[in-house]
Length: 135
Image (cartoon, rainbow, N blue to C red):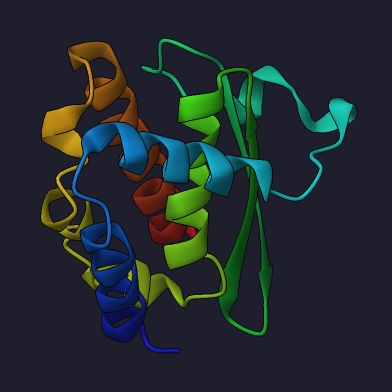
């Protein structure tokens, strides 16, 4: 599925909820669907700097596409990183670097997070971009 369609799908999913509390619940549920992240991969080099809670991000390149796995020790943060993985895992570096990541504004995520969580979101996006730029 192309990135723009995937973003639109997420915007539509979030528009089903009127209250932010329901959107938070949805984000938490997304985090529960993350694949198991091996303990041995929870290393400092995979830790995303700038997040209040701990977030580990791992990546591998296959057939020119980047695949991400992640984990967090906080349920909301785990949901946020799972949303980003859903959007950007399996994409080419060009697709990732060409994205403006505006989907987080379109669903109202950034302005509905605490300042520290919003900074963490920015750090997650920067790390995904960094990985894409290094491939």
